[in-house]
Length: 166
Image 1 (tube, helix red, strand yellow):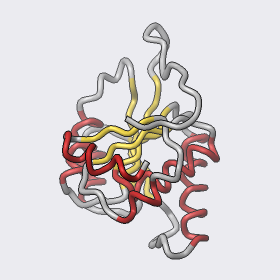
Image 2 (cartoon, rainbow, N blue to C red):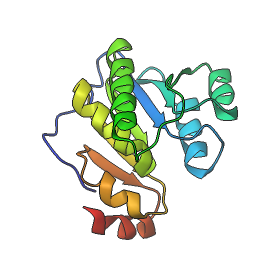
Image 3 (tube, rainbow, N blue to C red):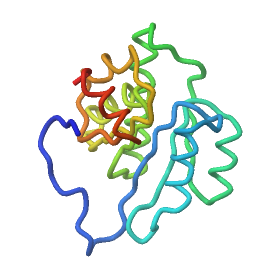
Image 4 (tube, rainbow, N blue to C red):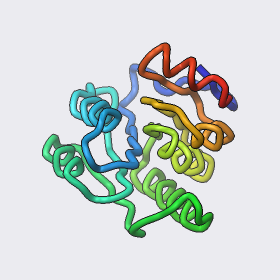
């Protein structure tokens, strides 16, 4: 759908596996989180090695770890979009995890995740994609101002609702 910046191949299929870091704002099992869990669980590990970054601890963290997937939890406690320093701290921590773990692709979940993942992508210089599970709303305007490589949606309806924000 929408993208910003230069596009380069994400991977040469003849190279070693790449690492993808899923950015999940929620650690409770909702719709978008279920999709993230299934993507991480059923990855073809010879091509992509998944890791997941959660904004807080919760039942989904244990479930993902049980599948042998490395999990990271934001160490700064609660953060809020209303507090710019919280946004910056979270994005910096995400960027640090991406660099320290040699992440090749950030995969943000929902608008909220993209706000932080898109900023971390700029800091770490790692490509980022955004999965918009829906519904769309006021955060999409803000998220739409932050560059991403591409946006994936779960339906034509979500795509039609997402377009006005880009």
